Image (tube, rainbow, N blue to C red; front, side):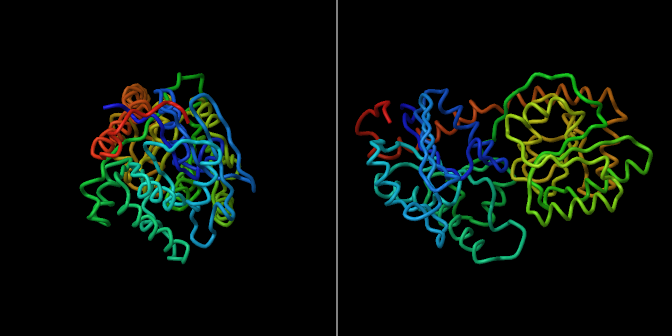
Length: 389
C-alpha cells in the first residue's frame, strides 16, 4: 500500500511564527514529510490581512488572514467554503490525507473529511479542559471544538503516555482510535560551552512551567555562596512577566537573571550547546520537547518528571527534580554540579537516548497511520494518486 502522496498540515503555528513546542514540532515534522517525498501543503495563519504563499520544492506554505471571509472571530474557526473556493481557484488538488494540529482548523478538516472522505489525523498537543485558569466563554468554545474533533477525526495521536491516559479518562470514546506518537529532535554537535553555573530555561512564561520556584532556587543557591546565572528564553503575558521580574528583584537576583524574550527556533538550537545546563522545573508537560532538545545537544539536564517528561527523563540521563519547589530545584542543581563524573555519564546517555527520537521516525509512524486509514477507506482504493499539487 502506497504512502500518502499529498498531505495538508493544518496549524496555527509554523516557522518562523512559533510560540512554543507545537510550532517547533509541526515545522520539524513537516520538513521530515517533505524530505521523505510527500508533497506537503501547510495551511496556517497570516500575520497581516492578505493571503501569502511560499513554495519550496515539494512544500507549499499558505497563510490565511484571521478575518472574513476566511475566518470567523465568533466561532474562532476558519471558514471551509471560502478556503475551498480559494484553493480551487489556485488549482490546488485535494490532499489524500490531512494532519491537523490546531483547533481553528477543526471545521475545515471535518468539511473535507465528510465531503471527500479524506482521512484525518489530529495530533492533540494539549487538552484544553485541563488548562489552568477560569472557564471563559472563549475557553468553553475551545473545549467544545476539541471534544468534537476527538469525535469526528479518523485517528488521534498524543505525544506521551501520560497525555494518552488523561485523554482516555476525559473522553473514553477515543480508546479505539488514539495512540502515542512521540515528538522527535535534531541531534547537534557539542560546542565549547559556558561553565555549568550558567543555566538556561526555555519555554513559555506561564505558572505551570515552574519559573517562580526556579527563581527561588537561584536565590537560595546565591545565599549559600554559589556563583550562578540563569537566562530565560520565552514569552508570556505582560502581567505575568512583570510579576516574575518583580519576584527576581525582591529575591535580590536581578544581576544573576537575564530575560531574553522570544528567540527563533534556529537561534535556540544554537544556544543550547553553549550553556552549562538546561533546567526544566515544570509541574505539567504534555511532552517536554525542550528537555529532549537539551539531551540531543549534549548538555546536562536538570528536570522534573511531570507528565510526558516521565517517558524519557530519568536518573540515567538527567538530574531529576523530585518536586517543583525552590528547595528541591536548588538541591538538584547543586547535585548536578557536585557529581561531575555522574553528570558527564548522564550527558553521554542522554545523547544516545535522543538519537532514538528523530523526526524521520515520527513521520514514518504517521505515514503508516495514513496508509492504514486509506486501506480502510474504499474511496481511496480506486486509483493511483499523482505527484502534483
